[in-house]
Image (cartoon, rainbow, N blue to C red; front, side):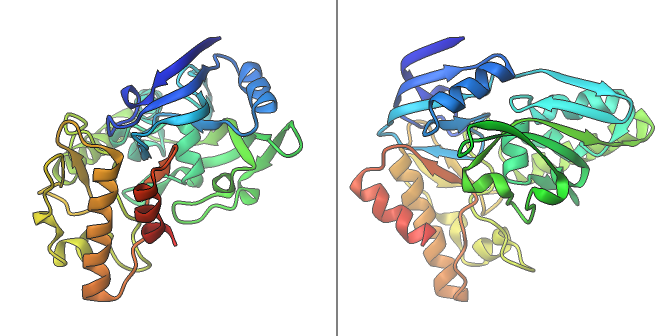
Length: 298
């Protein structure tokens, strides 16, 4: 297993932000992953780091990264995937096999562990729609457990995994049969749509900044509140969609949080709606970052 000391986490985050982590582990098998979770229950577990803001201050602790857990298998209409498998890859492979249900995953760079944890979704599809069973590590009991879909506590951008007791090791899904041509056409439509409403990773970002409030769109509220003009020296709100922040080159986590609070305050002032962050903030926060994050997450 690869172990790296004083690892610069920003190289892995889609924001390209984050300081040094004391120790980073890269398990390659489920047994290595389980053993690490057993021995280091307080370690932060990360996948593609695609909806993460990691403190520029770093983290004086341990991080387990699932990037080497790439095993997946298709058996008929069933798909078995380890936590580190990338969503876009699985979307392509299932499409080639004439299986429908993962078309939505083509457009964002998450891995299965993170996608299940946050119940990722787009274009009317959610990852929970097709989940049959999840193999989890229970950090309290120190053992591997299985839970079926109904036991996973899925809701909008949420699941049982968010609380931190359970970590996904691998998941089983059941997809529907379709024609590769129709599935690929839907994938192409999804990709085209994403290009118009989301910056590419050539402009480092972490996807949607805020969750949609019930029966409304965070992007719409932010747009109407005029946040597209918010432009700091090292970070800005993306001009084509108000719910994205772009790292202009050498932004810090404090820059992103400052912009998030400005956006949050603009919507709160105009609509008395308090948006909730979709981005997860991790690492050793500075006093200023703690203050900013408390405004966003109270």
